[in-house]
Amino acid sequence: MGILKGSCRVLAVVGFATALQACSGSGEDPRVSLCRDLAAEFSGSESSNWSAEGNRFVRPEYAEVTVGSDSGETASCFYEFDAAEELAAHGSEQFFDYSSLPYRMTYNGTDVAEQSLKAAVIVQQKAAPAEALRQAKEAVELAKQKIEKAVIEARSE
Image (cartoon, rainbow, N blue to C red; front, side, top):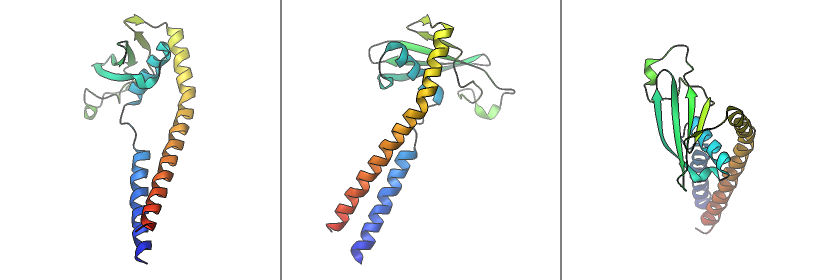
C-alpha cells in the first residue's frame, strides 16, 4: 500500500509539473513571435535562428519590434497604434494598444514590399495552428515519457 501511495504522489507531482511546463508559453509577445517568423520566412532560415533585440514605442504612432539572426541579419516590424483611448494602466512599454499585425517591415534596413508582407503574414497565420498542434503533441509525448519514468521508479522502490 505504501508503494501505491508513493507512486500516486510521484505521478501527481510529475503530472502537475508537466502540465505547467506544457501550458506555460514562452512569455514572448505574439507580435515579437510573428516578427521572428516573418524574418525567418524572408531569410529562408528557421525561426529559432532569430531572437528579439528590442522594442521601441513611438506613442501614439507605432511600436517597432526588432529581431536579429545568428548570422547578423536584422528585421523590424512596425505595429500601428490601435486603441480607441489610451489606458494609463498599460504603461508606455506595452503592446496592448497596438495592432496585432504589422503594417510595415524592414529586412536588413530595406522596406519589404507591402504585398510581400501581406502574403507572408497570411502564410504565417495559416501555419500557426499546425505549429500549435505540433507543440501540443510534443508536450503530450514529454508528459507521457515523464509519467512512464515515474511509474518505473515508483515500482522499483
